[in-house]
Amino acid sequence: GQNIDQPTEMTATEGAIVQINCTYQTSGFNGLFWYQQHAGEAPTFLSYNVLDGLEEKGRFSSFLSRSKGYSYLLLKELQMKDSASYLCAIMDSNYQLIWGAGTKLIIKP
Amino acid sequence: GAVVSQHPSRVICKSGTSVKIECRSLDFQATTMFWYRQFPKQSLMLMATSNEGSKATYEQGVEKDKFLINHASLTLSTLTVTSAHPEDSSFYICSATNGQANEQYFGPGTRLTVT
Image 1 (tube, rainbow over the protein chains, first blue to last red):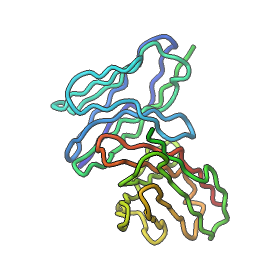
Image 2: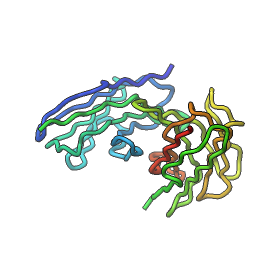
Image 3: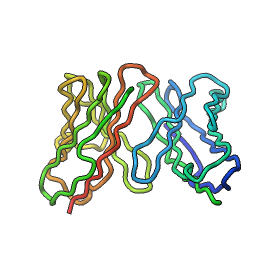
């Protein structure tokens, strides 16, 4: 079966660092995506990992370990606007995205 | 680049009527478009995959006669919700890919409310 697990909700403080984990079991693997979704809006692309390791893009970094079926999204220097849901998605062997349920991130001043 | 638009952004219709939602790729040719539905506080659920010029492939549990998808050109796909009911009220989002397998570009979504 296909399964993607993320924490339902996380809380962090403005200016701090937060790590959102994602574990997965899917039929085939053609990459892992992280998307940000603000309430009432469509998802926006954050990162794509297909090889093991860390991809850094500004305040956001994403890590992948294919052997462990594990990824994390690291957000640094948190800002209030980072309050959103963060969706982990796997592209399977048919090049379709399988979505996690998302992690709601709450940033407090 | 890689902009996808949807129209309308919001629509309210009466139960029993049909609603058409358009998805356009503005600056690239979309070989494949995807239609998703998202209920409040839930993740995206893939409804169907459509390739230009061919019939859409529907996910299990999605009624193809109720959710009509047409992908007549490389820049336009439409989703028609026929005989809409209140339980069809949802956020409908399309995405498009230009054949590069590593990214889908999302439209802004359409909020459908059926009264």
